[in-house]
Image (tube, rainbow, N blue to C red):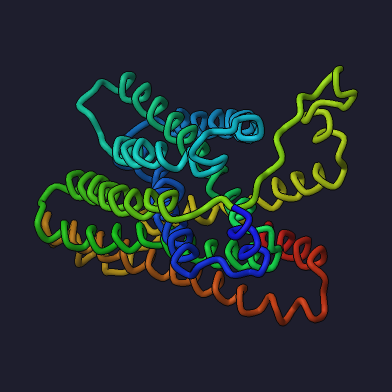
Length: 344
């Protein structure tokens, strides 16, 4: 342990270990990406669930997340599993996350009411399981090295691989949509198959990449044990400290207010499906069913592809531009400015 800690302080985490951590982020991004980008489109246009029900489900799930996320953080704070404070969760949770990723995009033969129950259960459980692995994964660098610069580089590169992984589902959906439109004659089957197959591929690849991380990454830094809070310690509880921390509350508020920019991710499939058709409507009316399906899928692929390309260019452009902007502005100014522009 002492030698490992000494090496970590010197900023010499083995390259193989870093690659393992980045690969885990790539796998996690695949499973998160297909859910965050396509679940709304799938529920409304493929599963044919009521838009009001879907919006209520999303709203209530976010409210539950506000409780579930800090609750998971507190559990991690107090628990000390033998396999590592963070690594332990990554041995057990990626598989059920992968399983529920597929189940969310599967349409069982149920009545409309039972289908809504099925969607509510699978979506909520997916969110809880994802959180159970997500918080330990992104907290892991704190235990890998006490070297702040090294830890920062690990987190930055893992964010990049995570972003790349989250883009894979979009490519799969577009490619499968065009391919299946040439094979299947029923547009409903095309939509169902492209989603469930994409979900299965993302779940399988994502699980393999995610699951290997705890086997190859080490926790070198002995993190302090959580002391019991309350009357005995004379210190206020964690939730009280959070509520009275003005900078934290302002940061949370800023995140909420700037969250409108994430509407693009959820809205893009709908815009590609309904708002644009890159073709001749009069000519399409004379087509047979198979050709119509192909024309619509090709249009969807092109429009959605352009929108996703814009996101990728913007994301990597920002990564290149940030170091230049930091020479003139501090982090706080950049954060406020980017959130304001993003919300706009």
